[in-house]
Figure 1 (spheres, rainbow, N blue to C red):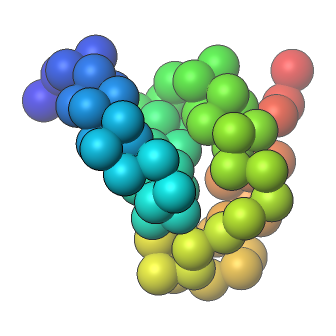
Figure 2 (cartoon, rainbow, N blue to C red):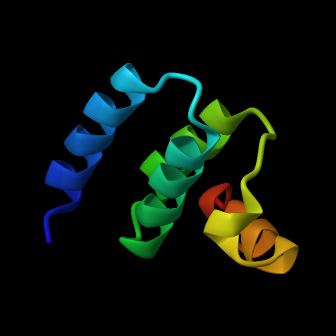
Length: 72
């Protein structure tokens, strides 16, 4: 799968559903899974602290991946 193509697909989804908390969280999650720290950080920042736990599974997973995205 191409992360670039998936990311472009999320552009379309977010234009159609700009208030979708799930879409924002899923985009950050997929950026983490693909190892794209820079994009993960960007998408976490866009979430503005609004978390959909159905995407992350647990608060610990969310916090671990958030910390990973913001490592330097």
